[in-house]
Image (cartoon, helix red, strand yellow):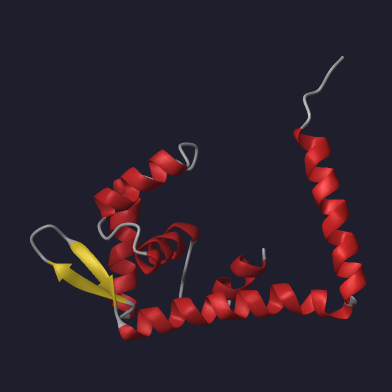
Length: 130
């Protein structure tokens, strides 16, 4: 939710697929609508975004100047300096907002929270018996 909050307050019109497309290129996972659609389908089959959705997202990102054509023939894209800055700034702000809240806890409280979280995860991983 923090991450969504950060990018939804940028001064451009963005939706989830467009931000996901920027992130995918930023991470170096894919660089064309085809490869983004294939990768995302394999990673999250229920997402349901089509190659056309990613094509539109790439066009929008190019309009903003955040990506540019890398290879016109196969329609691959790369981040521009501005795109790199926008995406990195969002990541940095997400981290700041997420971790700031933990700063009110003492080291001992953080350790206790970690222990209890680990115990909860272990309990949730156990099979349910009836």
